[in-house]
Image (tube, protein in one colour):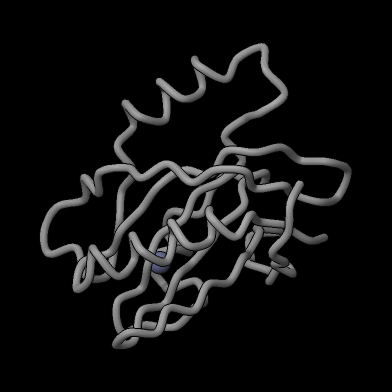
Length: 140
Ligand SMILES: [Zn+2]
């Protein structure tokens, strides 16, 4: 199990995480699941519609999710997962993430923001637990 992400897409996630600080940013990941590998093409920023304060949780605007699913229907791409940030946190799922982890087909990208440094890691759900996914930068 692994995931490959374009450099520009990784940069977009990193920039969004820094810009939203000290709140969590969030967005959806567009790409494809190819066998046991995720290919992340694009990261689409979403409004974090969680109630304030939003420094330790996020909720992706459901209208964006529906719109993207509609737009991608019939194409080779799909919404394959989402990203969010952890201001002053770790690049690992939090207790709040466990509480809203439902769909095992989703890829989770978590961007930990500490000062100017942003560290991004990928996870998937299996048997009700998060497992780290190898994340590599590359084209397709
Ligand atoms: Zn989280």
